[in-house]
Structures are given as C-alpha cells and as structure tokens.
Length: 100
Image 1 (cartoon, one colour):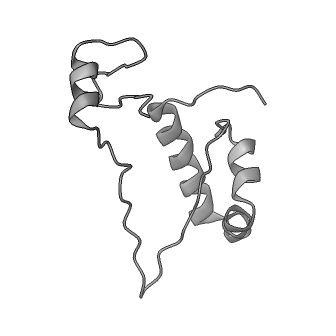
Image 2 (cartoon, rainbow, N blue to C red):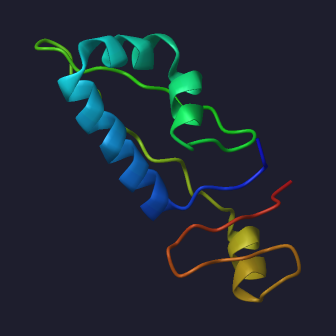
C-alpha cells in the first residue's frame, strides 16, 4: 500500500460509509471490530505509522475522545512564530514541531 496521508474530508466520508454499512450489516460490524485494520484498508483508510482503534458504545458505556495534545514550550512557540526551519503551522491549527 502506498505511503499516503489521508486528508480529514476523505477520512470522514469513508468513515461515514463504513458506519452506514455497519448499521445495516451485523456480520460486517463484527468483522470491523475483529479486523479493524483489514476493513479500513479495504475501504482505503490507511496511513503508514498510524494505528486506528474502534470502540463500540453500549447502553452502559460511552466513550469520549480526547484530542491529541498540542502542548508546546514557550521556546517552541517563539521558534514557530519566528518561522524557524523545521517548524510549520497550518491554518487548521495542526502544527508539527520537531521538539526535542
């Protein structure tokens, strides 16, 4: 499989298709929970080095997603603001920082 990063819009569209199918087809839903990587790859959701986890809400358990930390030190913030090499910041607030 090629090393390609899936964009958020594409991921949402494909994920919604998988959810819809899992609501109509219980065998597919069982496979999705048992073989998450296989099903996601079949639907074009693959990103080298990224692990996807699927959990299923129940009547008595609800899962909440905590977004990844975007913590940077004061020094990192100064370097990002100055446009230091190796630091990027996008308009979607998804920055990358080669922080030590």
